[in-house]
Image 1 (spheres, one colour):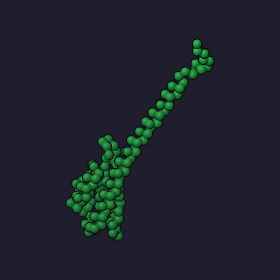
Image 2 (tube, rainbow, N blue to C red):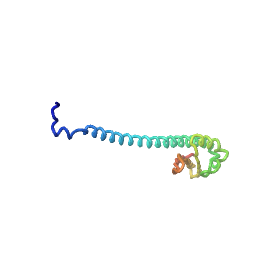
Image 3 (tube, rainbow, N blue to C red):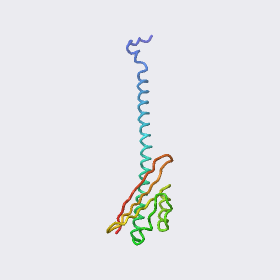
Image 4 (spheres, rainbow, N blue to C red):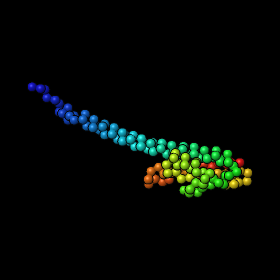
Length: 140
């Protein structure tokens, strides 16, 4: 015959299983939080990539305009309008790099220099607000 277990020990049956289940629940909550952070970081990474592309596109356009100072007003375009001939190749490159990009170029003559505002807008997903990037440059 087996010796009887003390009464106190009998009440402890199943506690290890309960502790293991609680540990699994806590681990699952931690993993769900990590997955959520991963999704947010992927979204932020995609947005920063579009901003980098917009910065590079604006820099290219400023370089083009710097080499054609006499025709700066020919580069103006309203947001979403068809790009003029001087701007068409750049607009096509920008649309290829940033899907759904809409551009606005404003040329404002000042006393000793010309201010150029280049705004590029895009929408990452359907239903999202527009993201935009504005670069202001001064050309003498």
